[in-house]
Length: 56
Image (cartoon, rainbow, N blue to C red; front, side, top):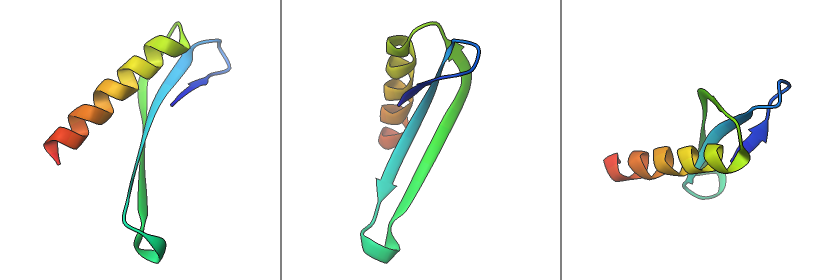
């Protein structure tokens, strides 16, 4: 995900959901670096999400 911040920069976030029903969990990471474009933030979030998935 990529969301604009109040300063006009973009914040990268990753959401990883697992499980079903009452046993589901959703992990959300919001990363500290700010980006000048939504595309740059999305590329960073995608890279971090893939790296996490490969480790787990």
